[in-house]
Image 1 (cartoon, rainbow, N blue to C red):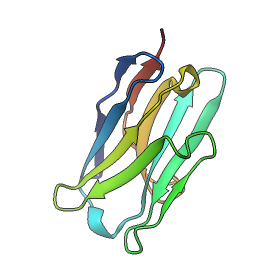
Image 2 (cartoon, rainbow, N blue to C red):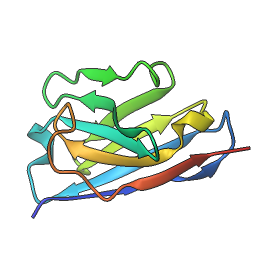
Image 3 (cartoon, one colour):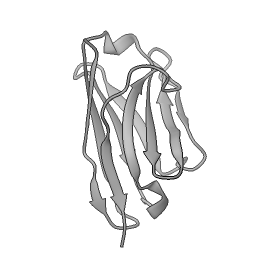
Image 4 (tube, rainbow, N blue to C red):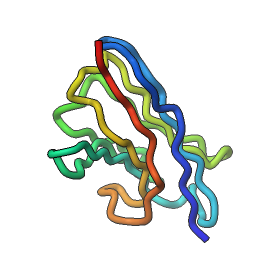
Length: 116
């Protein structure tokens, strides 16, 4: 059974940083492209970032480019999202998902709230 478990969310102030983690199991993590999505009330689901399995290519939404960094540790079967210079508009539930575009299975999400 595919399982994706996100962690690392929380309440932070504008300009702060957070690192999200996604622990994967039940599939061959190392050969799968992965991504992060987010969803906030009134905005729907938004693709945030993707990472390919073999080429190591990274892709970002314009809204987070230069502030967020996606990475993976295949040995630990874990996907990460380093988020710097957080803004109130980054407030959302963040999900990891299989696939560069996030079209595959995804986890339950972790809440990130950016507020002063």
